[in-house]
Length: 339
Image 1 (cartoon, rainbow, N blue to C red):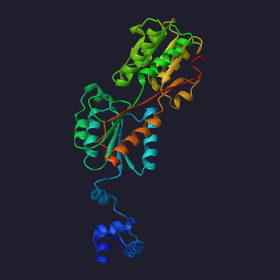
Image 2 (image 1 turned 60 degrees about the vertical axis):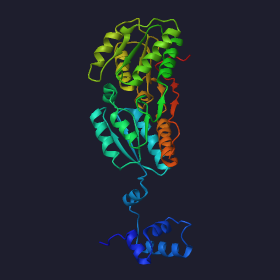
Image 3 (image 1 turned 120 degrees about the vertical axis):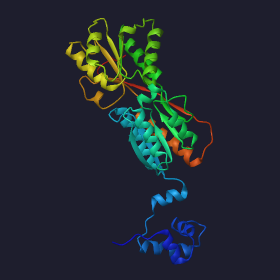
Image 4 (image 1 turned 30 degrees about the vertical axis):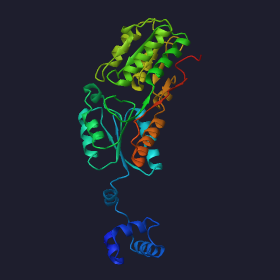
């Protein structure tokens, strides 16, 4: 097996510095055309390939971004990752992707592992346990150590960094208002994400729409469950109230379960029971009837977060941190009447 030729060996061959060889191979104008040509031809003849690890140490850059996603089973985060990957590739960056699985401990360990020199910066959505604990020390330490971070979707004011968020409050207000305009008078909510900042904002948006339309807020029909609680039983109890004619689900999996129950209870959809859910994943498009959704534009969020991080890395920007707010869109399907 032929051993790889190195920059050091090429430099020795021409009695020049390693820096000169590196510049020649990168077609730098600092090196004469004659010297450049000789070095490039020699490197090609000996099948030289750059050592990415060595280059990253030399340049103090790895051209690699760390991505930490809390739940890969959630279609929204899958869409965001697609946007991150496509934009990173376009900008010449590689990714190391990790899943915290909503665990504080996994998130802490992953941040510690990656910030040790493997990556140039992070794109992260905070794990559920981290938001419950309100312990962001690991991320604050990373920022203080000079590692740029962009938070997306689940964010906190405790960390000074760039952020990309969805207007969850407005999205829920818009969804609830749409249900009211189609004739709904008593709208229930199902939330299995009440521990998360986004879940709380969506409930507040729902309440604002009710208030704006002079409808009462009934806490008994706001179903707040942890991931370990029995969603099906809780929804059966709520849906037994035949005066309820609308349902807002704050994420996709609860919407699919609720739709099955609504159909089993022989409600006419959408005439007797209308329904909207976050987010616009594939499942909502392949059930019967198809579910009206609030799209968060996950791919665009991923693209935006990546652009923000790379701009900060490459421009070494000391500008004020910014928060980009992405507007949601309502996609009308079979579970609501058109306005």
